[in-house]
Image 1 (cartoon, rainbow, N blue to C red):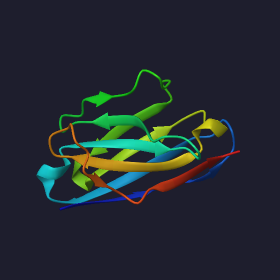
Image 2: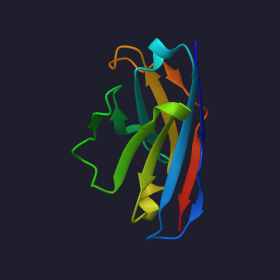
Image 3: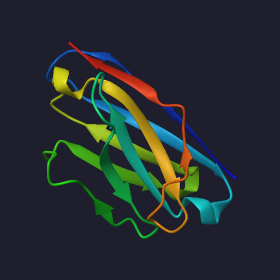
Length: 116
């Protein structure tokens, strides 16, 4: 079983930046890939970024280059840096883990980001 705990969310002003953290623990094979997702109010969940065990990253084409995912294996932590925040970035941000890098079966509780 894999556990994920997000932190780093909060209230920021437009144009600000945040770094979200996701601490991953439990079965290492269940967390080969880690991704960040977000759920804006009244909208569907969308993927933000993923990172594989070798550090290869992937971002959806619909998002700008304001998001950067990285991982620090020594700390079992995956980060998401978001720059130039706008109110449209307001959402609950979740990290999720996948053993096969296809099905993300393990999810954290989320961290709220509010931009005003």
